[in-house]
Length: 192
Image (cartoon, rainbow, N blue to C red; front, side, top):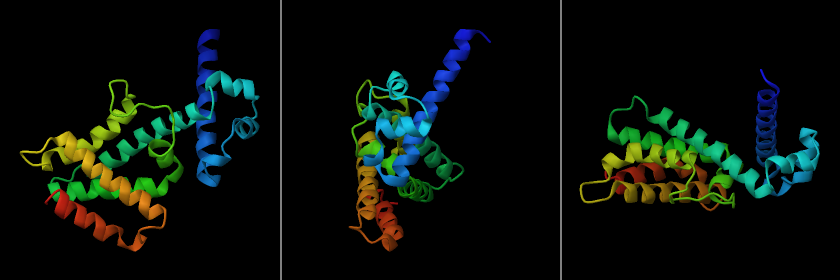
C-alpha cells in the first residue's frame, strides 16, 4: 500500500469516526449537544482536523442524513422483500418507516428536520436520498391507481408517514394508536 493510499484510508476512517460520534452524541443528548469542540474532544483530534473534513456542523448533519437515508432504504426494502401481496407489502413498508423514525430520532431529524445542506427533489439530490425515495416508490407505485402519478402518490403517502412519525414523537399523537393509523392509511389512501 502506498503512502497516498494509507493517508486516504486514514482520512476516510477519521471521517467515519466524526460522523459516528456526532450521531451517537445526537442520539444521546440531542443535536444541540453536537458542537465541533465536543466532537473534537470525543474523537481526540483537534478542531482544525475536524474542519479539514467538514466545514461545520451543517455538513456533519448532512453526512449523518446521508448515512441514515441509506439505512432507511435498506430497512424498508428488507421489510418488504418477499411480501407478495400489495396490502401486506405497503403495511410492512409503513411499519418499517415508522420504526426507523422511532429508533433513530436524531438521524430522522438530520434527514427531515435540520439543515444539512442537502438538496431534496432536485437534479443534484444525493443518491442516498434518491434511493430512500425509490425504496418507498417500489412498493407504493403499483398501488397508486391508474389515474395517479406514482411519484405524487408516493410523496403524499410519505408525507402522511412523516406526519405520524413526527407528531407521535412530539407527544401530539398517542403512541398506542400507531397500528390503527397505519391500517387507516393503507385502507384509505392506498385503498387496499
